[in-house]
Length: 590
Image (cartoon, rainbow, N blue to C red; front, side, top):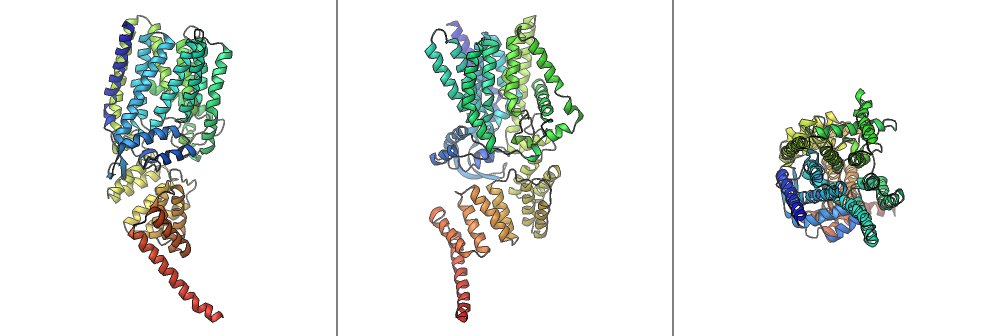
């Protein structure tokens, strides 16, 4: 009875601490980085219908196949719908309220915190050690990105299924002798949870290795049984990992030579080690691309620190199995994003706070084991308690930068002045708010830091067009075509539509038709994009196709739109005039 009361008190305490530390997040907004793609401008969430959710299970979206995560987004979106309004901080019209998503993020993090406590207590068999490890996981400032960024609800939900799978595995090992039937059920359930984790976040592919480490280092499971469980998990994870790999493309900015990748991975590990102990100056884009790492001499030496610590822990693995497990979990959870295999985000940075979300369980295990190992224990417990309070204070302070998109972007630039995306997104907000000069300055600063972003050239040209400077707008587009390494990364349907409408204003309907058709192909459900294509077809003289496109818009998409009806009548009139002009020529020929 006393143990149940103690556990209840610990659980309530963990919930309360998380609620206080992440207090700012409850009232935070969307941010100008990926939240549009994944949430408030995601065509499958606006509206979140069953048909749209079914499509997410049938196809990839934005080069990701994470349908379970998007299903969770859709479920939240059902409660988050509000009248469409302009969000000045984003510079976009939104019809979803961020509060529901933030509440869900914090709820998932609290659930993961409790699962972490249950898992670590099973592994260490010590409630105090489990509490210390869990508090590190719950409160570390590196977790703020995962909790504060709505888009990373994918990682939080993936973490929930991953931790549930690991806990089910540990429970199955504890009941294997007494109740073998229960053990098999738990093991089968753990495999399903692995699939759930993969359907939320593909980096969960390392779970079989984590399971193997737990089985062998702490539970003492024989190799045969440990490998059987790991193989079953791998069979569940690898098909989804292969699918993700096949649909994701790596930008040239994130590529590296095969011999450079171990050095990039070593630098990433050294970076995470540093940030776990000195968690300051955190942001979403550190700019540590493979090219940046290899351009510094120390980039080839950073690996010595993590490898040296790894060797020391390996040599003491028999005496300190919990510490060794913590090291293995820390490295293994980071493994998919160390750069040994190139991945999409390396165009921005190999390292990111959110990649360390589950890895921090390993750090917590190491700290908890040290508390039991070092003497005098009372002093150590006091030092660790002070450190945990400091972590909580740093996290509370870090949460301020996620309250609005403007705070988020300005903080990113403060930490990393070379973060090109932040200048671009600031420009978007200035543009919507009517500050054309400020928007132009932000876009041009973005191109100074990254001259290969086609999306930014389009926006610079659009600002010039709004300033009634069409010659400058055309010059920018010409310059973009001459820029080596130009990339369309980040170009969505809305961006191609912008480009197409801009080209229409510049009296280039042929080029506009390509851009507008691309937008319509990316979002075939949009009536606006379909009607833009019809207008472009009419402008290039393809009147039969234009008439058919306008009729499609009227019958299927916009039956009562007066602008569409007027454009249809205009296309019909032009077609009639062309036929009338052709008839005398045909009569003369006869």
